[in-house]
Amino acid sequence: MKGRDARAVSLTLAVLLSMPLAPWVVPRACAAPSAHWVGTWGAAPDSAGPVLSDQSVREIVRISIGGSKVRLRLSNLFGLEAVEIGPVHIAQHMKGSSIRHGTDRSVSFAGHARVSIPAGASVLSDATDLEVAPLAELAVSLFVPPTASPATQHSLGMQTAYLTEHGDATAAERFPDEDVISARPFLTDVEVLAAPAAWSIVTFGDSITDAAASTPDMNRRWPDRLAERLQADPKLATVGVINEGITGNRILKDKMGPSALNRLERDAIEKAGVRWMILLEGVNDFGYVGAHPAPGEDVSAAALIDGMRTLVRNAHAHGIKIIGGTLTPFGQFDWPYHTLAAEMKRQAVNRWIRTGGEFDAVADFDAAVRDPAHPDRLRADYDGDHIHPNDAGCAALARAVELTALARSP
Image (cartoon, rainbow, N blue to C red; front, side):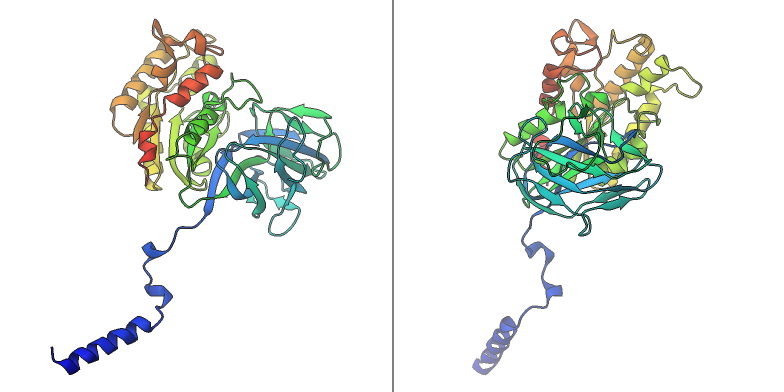
């Protein structure tokens, strides 16, 4: 290249490099990752509870990962009409019904202190400035003005909630201990503005995931223990756990809450930041027919496997990986819930989960808690009531989740 041509090329490059780049030509991969909303706690709505009218309720939740801001989702899924809620407050929990001084924050909805939620709908709050640490306990207080509509609830909270007889006590540092309940009215999600690397895993199941035989108020459900394991691993400390277990839930049929097939989108796919889910469900599909025989209720192992395939396929269609949990034993549980036919179906489904290759990973919950001498029963030291693991059994379930696959998650 001649000297004059070289100088011309150099001048052209200099001019081009000095020009500001149009925003539409900046490669997306070059943009720095930023904080984003991730689910840190959940309780799936499953039924219509009692009417709460001119009353306040304070619910205690232990989150999994922390963040710089918080927002809440309230549900009126089972309401008969629109329900108004507000004021709503959130604070760091101290003990009992008390909150930590100086941490109380008002929660708004589109800038307003009250929100009207149509029947069958839910609403997400505005961001609330409250720095929260991993595994912190929060107190969420809701006031429900006079209404005749039943409260949408998660029926088995395994956590004490505090209820007033009348009036707004949402800002009180110590809630009036007028009444206590164990259900979770209206509140279904807590999200945090978390680190760029943060994401969440949904534990999707029935009363075993709800931890019906664990100690109330102690956060000993197996998803809680899984969250503790993740926090102890530096590679996974930004992974949230969202518990979407429903007591009595089934994969194929509605009864105790919508079936797993019918609630997958709302209770898993749509959760903020979800990348993985763990499926532990199917015992009720087999046991329910023995306890409540009715035409069309009988479920074959093949039908349940087809249902699980549908869950896997739908999760994958939304970029979510899924861990298949083997069904835990329930021998000695009330006959006719546990029968020989149900046990044979359970074994067939577990063989498919272990060897079928359709899940992205397998958590062998059955092997973790079964009695080696009686494989159709829970180990005695893990046995809560012959179907639900106790605190030690829940810890064993949490240990059965291999963290290596999660650590490789993109």
